[in-house]
Image 1 (cartoon, rainbow, N blue to C red):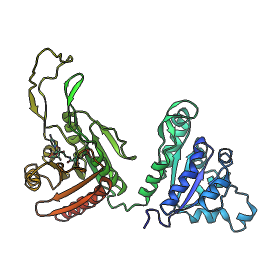
Image 2: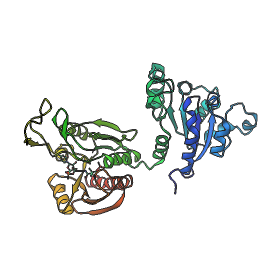
Image 3: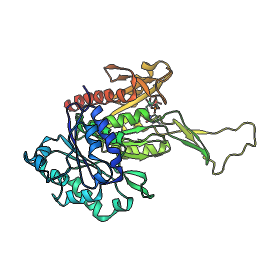
Image 4: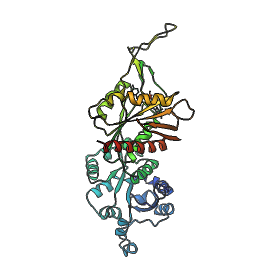
Length: 403
Ligand code: PMT
């Protein structure tokens, strides 16, 4: 079954330059099984034609409150009741203001008043307009009513300005839509996840690190978000985008990650230590670039704090999941870390195998509890993450039920 199978999505398009992306949005939503109907404001029609949207959606496009034919059957009420979700993309400052004021002076604003379907708003406007007090007040009001605000993104704008105000990319909007309909079995849980490598400075231009890309930890963050958890992602330096909606805490060194992890984990229900933390750091970081004066140099290293083991010492400790990256005796070493670090679960990956583990798109895990051993076979990290998140939750609930 497709992710959006039989979901009825009403796409409201208002008059911004990003309207040119909406035929692609309609097509991608339909690819995932959604039935899409489109409503356009007069402004939207200055950027893109109803005929285009009709062709890609396969449905009649509505654009007038005063359409005598449609209103024979109370068209605006019918549309308002039909939708499982209303997405307004792009949402200009004008339509945002009109919805907040409860106006009903065109079909789209009227629908927003007449519906009890959830409404998602993808803002798109000049960065100054986005930061304006009026817009921010309106957005806060809509959020307090339970409307979903998707974006905006940052970057170069049509007017040449750079900043916040770009409509999110089509792929992001489709991801948010499918996340919206996903089973929210982690609602009311707060997950803190560490991801990526740490960097331990040697001098101002050199550091010790490892090959972690952050892909595994970021996939877990996305899977937990999708399942309705509040997610704090504490990440070492990586080149990938954090999932929209998570709280991203960027760190560089193990000591910084240690400090942030202890502070956030104290309020969390679940802590997942996926980061590849450097076990050692340089004892004395050189303040100037080290010169190539001698044939050999020695750098003294000192042990870094063990983040996950220290989280396990918190008085109100969350449910704790560690990772074990091993190249041999995987089960033996993983079980040792599970016990020694006082964890609830440990997910072991054999990083000696090609095509999985560090910096690859795929992984395979063996998850150990004190009594269980569960295999998650080789697959894309996004698929592995979904299975792992569900498994962690089952063990979390079991532990809660025994309290
Ligand atoms: O980021 P990717 O490229 O997607 O790769 C994913 C991964 C291979 C990095 C990931 O799946 C993984 O295995 N992460 C843990 C890597 C690791 O450092 O394992 P470890 O066996 O050294 O550490 C055991 C556990 O202790 C881990 O949960 C680690 O986060 C934690 N640890 C380790 C050292 C330290 N000082 N503090 C810690 O919290």
